[in-house]
Amino acid sequence: MTRKLKILISDDSKLLRKKLREELEKLDCEVIEAENGKEAVLRDLQDKPDGVILDIVMPEVGGIEALQVIKEVNPDIPVIMLSSAGTPQKLMETLKLGALDFIQKPYTSAQIKRAVDTIRKKVPQHE
Amino acid sequence: MNSQYFAQYLLNTGMLSGDEVKGMLMKSMSCKPQLPLLAMYQGLVTARQLMELGVETAAFAAAAQEKGLLTKSQVQNLSQAVTGESLRFAQALLDAGRMDYARLAELFADYREAPVRPVKEAVARLADGSLDKELEYYNAYVEIFMRSLIRFMDTPAVINVFESLLDSDEQTRIVSQRLSGDLSMVTGLFAADDTFVEMARRYSREDIQEVDELAVDSITEFLNVMNGLYAIDLAKRQMDVDLELPRAAKNQKPVGSHQLELRIDTGFGSFVLVLATDEFVLHDLT
Image (cartoon, rainbow over all chains, first blue to last red; front, side, top):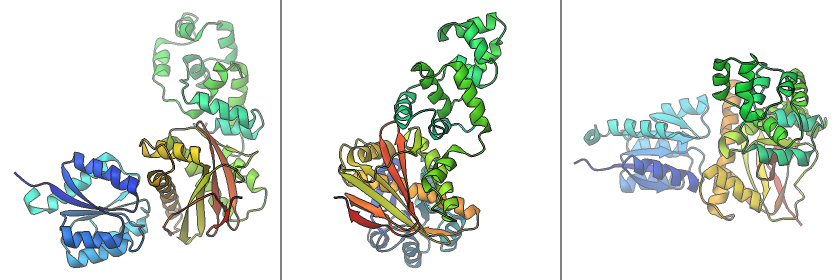
C-alpha cells in the first residue's frame, strides 16, 4: 500500500489553509501547514513533503523567495503556486524559478485535484 | 442590458430612494422572476397584453398560450431561462406593489438606452469632479468589485450615492491592501462589526459569530482576491502591479490621497469600499 502524499501548504490566511486542508484531506493527502515563506522553507527541510503549494504575498519571506530557496535545496520537489496575484508576469517569473503550475485564487476543487495529480506524478512511489 | 445594475440605475435616477432600494435588495434575494415578467423582459409580450390578460401568475402560461401570445416552446424556454439580479429586483418591485408591468417596461427601455453605465455614473457622482486620472482606475476596480459581490457573497448590491458610513459611532473594522508597481492604489473595506461578521460568514461559508481572527482573515482574503482580479485586469492593459501585505484595524478611519468612499448597500447590510492612491493613515474614530 502506498503511503499518503505529504503536501506542505504555505499561506498567511488561516481561512485559506483551513479550506485547502479540507480539500487535500478529501484527496487522501497528509497536510503540513506554514504561515509564511520562512516557515515554509523550514517545514520543507524538516518534514520533507512530496510537494508544496505556495502563496506569493506572505509576511517575513514571500512566496517567490521561498520558492527560490526550496528549489535550491531540493530542485526536484514539485511546487505549485496558489495566489490572487496571478498576472502573466508573476506566472512567468514563478515558472522560470521552477514552479510547476500557478493557480489563481479563488481556486476550484478541480484545480486542486489537478495540482495533486501533478504532484503525484512527480513522486516515484505515487506514479 | 447588464444583468445586475438595474437597481443602481433606479437609485441614480431617483426613481427609488436609498431606503427603498435597500429594502428591495433584501426582498430580491429570495425572489424568483415569474413567467409574465420574463416574457415581457424578453419582448414576447407587452405590458398592455399582460394587463389585458389580467390573470394570476400561476394561470399565465395557459392563458397566454390560449390567447396565442406565447407558444408552448416559448413557455418552456422561459421556464428554464437563466435570470440575473435585475430581474429578481424587478420581481421584488412587482411583488411589493411598488411598480406595475407598464412602469417596469418603461424603465427597462430607459435603462437599455442610458448613455452611462450605472456603476460608473455612481462613482463619478461621488467623486464630484475631485478626481483626475485615478477615476478611470477606480471605475474599473468598482465594476469588478460589484460584480464579485454576487459571486462571493451571494448578494445584490448598489452604491448608495446619498449617504456615507465612515463616521459610524458603532464598533468598526477596516481591512486594506496596497497595490504598487505601475499603479499605486490602496483599497479598503470598512464596516460595523455586525456587518463585518456577516460578510466574513458569507465569503468563508464558515460559522463565524464574532469578529475573531477567522473573520478578519476572511475579509482580508476577500479583499486580496478582489485585488488579484483587478491586477489581472490591469495586466491586460500592460500594467504590472504587486499586492502588498494586507492590514487590519479596529475603530479606525482611513485617510488617503485622492480618497473615494463608496457606501455599498447589500441585502444584508451596508459597508464602505475606500479607494486611495497611497497608503491610508488611520485615525481613531472618536
